[in-house]
Length: 282
Image 1 (cartoon, rainbow, N blue to C red):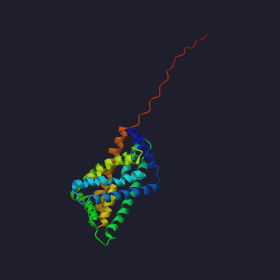
Image 2: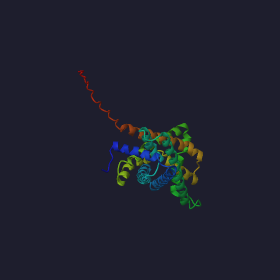
Image 3: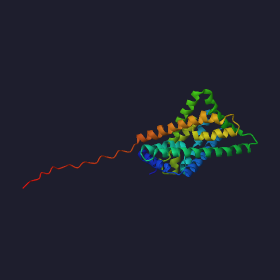
C-alpha cells in the first residue's frame, strides 16, 4: 500500500533516526553538502521565477517552486539539519538513539549544509557577474534585498528583531521538519513529492526563516556587494534562526508526533492461577 498511516509513519521515523545516528562523519558531510547545494538551487530558482509579480503572487509562485530542491533531497536520501532536528529526537525519546549521537549528527550535517550552500552561492555569484566584472542583475538584486530584510531590519529593531528572527525560525521549521517526516509517509516518488510539497511551500510563501536557506542567501549577498558584515549575519540571523529551527523541529514536530503516536506499552504477562494442593498423609 502506498501510504503509511501515522503509527506506521512514526515507526519509519524511528528507523530513520537510528540510521542517521549511525552515519560516519564523511557521509554526514557529503550528504549535508549535497543538501545545502540542492536547497540553494531551489532558493535561487524560486527568486528567479517570482520576479516581476506583486507581493501576493510572488509569494505564491516562489512557494510553489521552492520545494523542488527539498524534493530532490528527500528522494536522494540526503541529510538536512533542519529535518534532523525532528527525526533524531524521536529516536532519543524512544530509546533508540543516544543523546551524544543526536548532537554529533546535528553538528556535522549542519556543517555540511553550510559548505554546500556557500559553494553554490559562490558559483552563482560568478555566473551572475561574469566572474565579478559585471553587474549582478535582477536575481542578484533580489538576493541582496532579501538578505538585508533578514539582517539589517532585525538589527534596527534591536532585541525585538532578534526575537522576531527566533520566532520565524520556529514557525519555519515546524513546517520544514514536518515535510521531512511526510517524505516517509509514502513508498512512491510521486507520493513523497506530493506530501512534502504541502508544508514546505507553506513556510517559503509565508517568508519564515530557514537557517540552511540563509546559509546560501547571506554569503551570496555579501559576495555580490551587500552592505552586510559576517557578524551582522551571524548574530542577527543565523543564531536566532537556528535556535528557532531547533525548537520548531524538535518540540512542535518530533515531540508532538511522538507523543501523539507513542508505541503501545507491552501488555502485562498473564499470571497463571496457583492451585492449592492438599497433601494427604497416609
